[in-house]
Image (cartoon, rainbow, N blue to C red; front, side, top):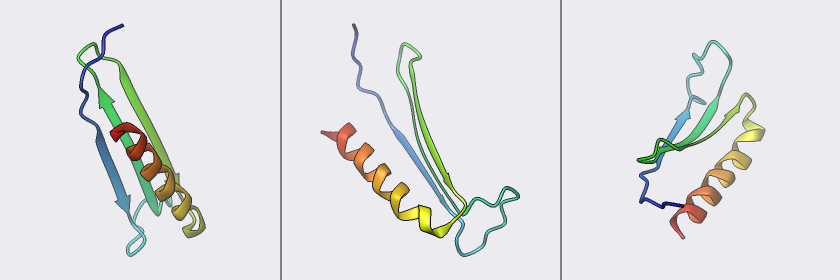
Length: 69
């Protein structure tokens, strides 16, 4: 098993002020990474209700905390 330092990309789209998304997505969070051996990590959550957003924000924070540990 090989391990490599892998850059992690975190994308957050917050459309609460202007929801122009055709699919009604208010908030989207994505964590994405590709290692030198082309292994991929991709985690994405979309919110269509403001009530879902705090949970997704918390999940992103936990992922980042775990990955940075």
